[in-house]
Image (tube, rainbow, N blue to C red; front, top):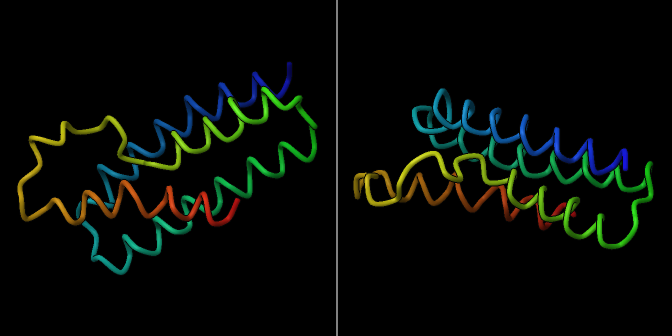
Length: 110
């Protein structure tokens, strides 16, 4: 039960932090900074969830759905922030990088 509650908090706080990071830094910073922050975001999220799973030993359903599901969702910091059709064509590569690199880092670090 405690794992479930912690993951609900991770879901809420992680989404807010991801949107804030995206709006304030990732869409305006140099690409090297964006690349580094995206890797750190995904890997640190994977490390945190892995640590929670080892500490609290949730059952397999909670581990898969709440642990890995919430982690995958939160690892994309800009998910749901913008409608994809409103992003200018010249900004699409950055948008895709911000969407996919942290998720890839989450999977790789997991």
